Length: 393
Image (cartoon, rainbow, N blue to C red; front, side):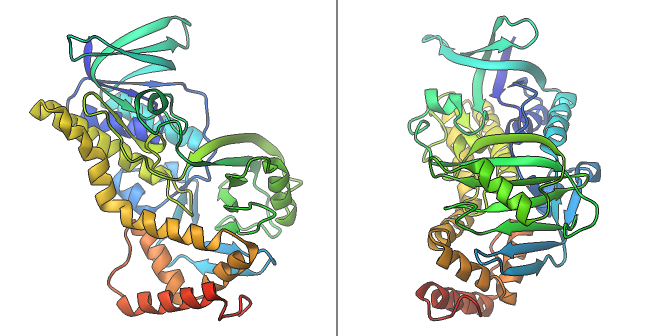
């Protein structure tokens, strides 16, 4: 069997790419390690649910309010109007996507990726992995490969320039049994901007129905992630809740400059670095990345031209680069000190900021139909950054 494409990784990006190619009647296989649950807050926007036909059974909570918490414990509650933030459990959600791809016709393998080899005189790629059940090394042959094996991707590190140096934060969270009553609100997510919790990112409490994700992220070496998470649990009244599991993993925060080798391989999802700056949101962008990688590979096969691999990054960045740049600028401006974080939370009190932020989040596009509101936000943003507005107002 020579596959049209082999996908390394079966998370949201890899599973989506597999489903898309199977839908195009391509011979496609994907390799997943299985059993690993990625640390993730689990937030998904309505656009993802709509565009990728996610059943309501996969949405374990629908968040109606976002609470921003400053270093001085001031809170700003932002109502999510005309929609909600969906929450998924990655253990179940990822498996749902893998099963859907398999049912569509993608061949599923379970094991650990080892290496890629090429035969010089043939346009065929050999992908080697260690099978989980037999513990034997297995070789699969394909015309194209999609690397969707997450942050610190082995595929990216071995096959792509810059794959070893992509910037990232380390995310850590604890899944706990959700309490009944008390100050915990199952319809509200809490986002904590506090240098004691994270010196360069944020902490969170995200409800997941019967459970909740409590965690934080940072790119600073030596920062105690477990201690910071313990502080969040204590301040949120969750320190007595039973802990179900603890997880940590890197999250990339900058897309790679190049996602393909121009011949037979393209990256997708975390492997390509497509996690949103500032928010760290990755599920939606991972699935879009998988979709675009599948589109690029399908065009390569259709027109027998590997140059079409570049379509994956070109199409993705054409749609999302402006949002990424705005979020990166916001992170650089406001995450550098507690004074700036305090001002950021103050800015979140503004109704225009609230409305435009969640309209953009839910639809994954910057709102462009309200130029007056954008101008007001820009002016207020400058006043906060220059200190001409007090952070407590």
